[in-house]
View: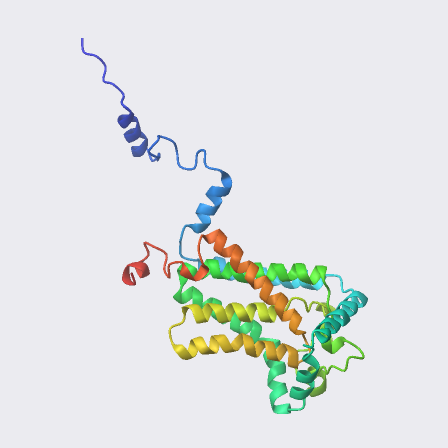
Amino acid sequence: MGEPPAKTTTGRSAARSESGGSTLADGTAPGVGVPLFERVITRIRTPHSPKLWFELLLIVFSYWLYSQIRNAVPQQRGLALRHSRGVWSFERNLGLGVEHAINHGINSVTWLIVPMNYFYATLHFIVTVSVLVWLYLNHPGRFRAARTVVFITTWLALVGFWLFPLAPPRLLAGAGFIDTVRVHHTWGSVDQGNLSTVSNQYAAMPSLHIGWSLWCGVTVASLAKPLFVRVLACVYPALTLLVIIATGNHFWMDAVGGAFCLTVAYAVASWVYGCWVYRLPRYPPGTQEALEHP
């Protein structure tokens, strides 16, 4: 009588393969024995194209949540004013208390300060969203990592708002700063009308205007090809710094705080994704775009 056919390892592997299973070289299933943290990191680092509906939903939800948390931070007026006086005193002791001169000097030039008021009220959001859209359309392989930097910067700023409430210079009584929005009757002051009841006026440290504008500048300067676009990308955060000081909304120390948050966010994102954010492939490997633009 013949012996029954031997069931070899190859046969078993083939059978599992035909039935839809998959194994590694050592015969184990993928992920078995791999720590959860490593599996999560591997999943995050696996390039894939961003989904428009998910990204839109994530951005809208995150901005709404940011607004709710920011405005829920206790408005500790007395503490915020004490912190503001402390920051102003610190800057002057360094011989770098330049905000008062800039605020008064530019306020005297109406044709200059009025556009700056609108710049402060609108462009930090418009430009940031525009750069995100540009990334999504032209650099999908880098979009998720770069978007993560914005989110981390924003969440770190929320921690700063909570731990260190700070009044903007324009609210510092006796220091002589000018509220340029009030003086020139332009739109955008959060302490006028109904806005004063729904917006936290003591969330000046760190400056998200600086954090976001620096992110826009670094992103566009790193990825754009035309020289004039890269130059504009470098000018934008510098102009934002001038605007936040000229309008009496921030000390330059707030800008340092915003830059610090962004630096930490870049460090975290680069660690999570395994490399500098803008060195990731422009298009996810295996996509049609990646094949057309090797």
